[in-house]
Image 1: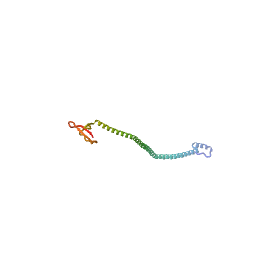
Image 2 (image 1 turned 45 degrees about the vertical axis):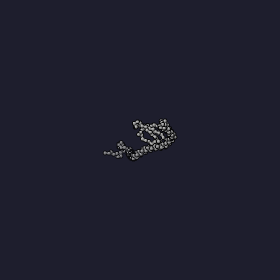
Image 3 (image 1 turned 120 degrees about the vertical axis):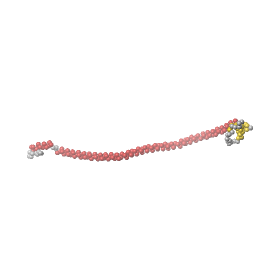
Image 4 (image 1 turned 180 degrees about the vertical axis):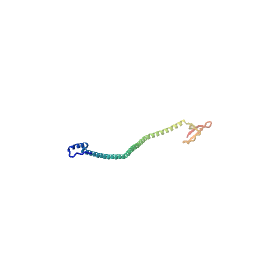
Length: 197
C-alpha cells in the first residue's frame, strides 16, 4: 500500500519528501547516464564500422599482395634467368674477342715465319752448292782411288773386282770388256777384269 502525502498539512510533507529522496536518484543523474550510454553505443558502432572498413581494406590489400606475389616471383625468376643468359653472352663475347685477336696475331706469326724462312733460303742454297761440290769431289776421289788400284794387263789399264758369276747383268753407261778367270773347280766367284775403253 503506497503512502500518500497528507492534504493541507505542510508540516509533514518534508518527512515523506526525505524518504522518497533517499530511495530515488536525481533526475539529472539519470539523464546523464542515458546520454553516456547513447554516446558509448554510438562510439562503439563508429569504431566497429571503422574497424570493419579497415579489416576489409586489410583483407583486400592482403589478397592483392597474394595475387601480385606470384607474378613478382615469376618476374624475379625471369630476371635471374636473364642475368645468367647475359653472363653467358659476356663469356661468348670474350671468347670471340680472344679468337679475333688470335686470328689477327696468326698472320703476323706466319709473316715472321716466312721472313725467317726467306733468311734461311740463301743458307740452304749455299749448303746445296757445297753438297754438290762434295759429291763432285767424292766422285773425283773415287776415280783417283780406282786408278791407283788399277794395273796394266796386256797393254790395257784394268781394275780387279770380285763379282758373282750369277750376278744379273746391269746396263753400263760405258762399254766394258770383261775377261773372267775361273778357279780350278769352275764354280763360285772369280776374278773379273774390267777394261775401261
